[in-house]
Length: 336
Image (spheres, rainbow, N blue to C red):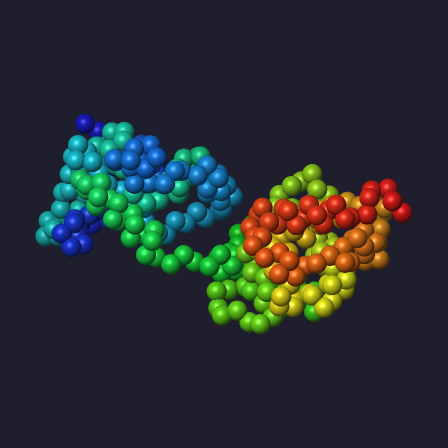
């Protein structure tokens, strides 16, 4: 039978042996499979595959000139797979691993989204794999739990901050990161030093995370039906400054102040949801200056942004609720 031959290193952790090897993604896709808990509670250990994550990974791979997945995937060869390890002379732990070229002989324990995200592309890249053999469902579950519950996730703001220095080319995420950092560093920005960039201890003035800023901004930038998203980043920064300068002046005592949500994730997300509507009104009046923006949001001046008023309201649904109320208080289109 035809086999996939890879160089491998054989080792063990405790009493459980495993192989460490590089394999082309196309070959790994051919032999692997996933069983989620919802599909088969007796044999499945995986979460349901997220189509959104697959699309994100596929987009990353397609847009990147250098695709790097430095962390390994983990698989378990079924007993029926009958993989064969042939050690080198004098090196019992190094050699060739012959893997039968059969479909569905290796269950993915960790790395399903990376692997099946690659399937959506035409790229064939080598992947680092740790391959166990003949593990029971219980043993696979323990490995899955160790990986996904014991390791501390990376702070999302730190990820975005690092993403900015590893850039190659431009995409919506990088543009959003650049704009967010500019608004945090520019002396005339109402967000000066208010954005928390890393996972270091939060400073008193830092009321908003880089992650919250980028996520809200990305939603606008991705929508090409919005006039703002088709401008260059320099113009976008100026317009956002104008908008939030008007908001910060209107709510001077609440802006950046403890006890109010204006510069926290809930308030900021809602204000960003309303921003395209405000910008459209300004465009229609051919007046993007601060005085016109203030005129459009005049109905907000008595609004209560106190944390007490919005206690228990959070997340995307909370931001959408707040945004809907703010939008209803905008000056009506066509009103002078």
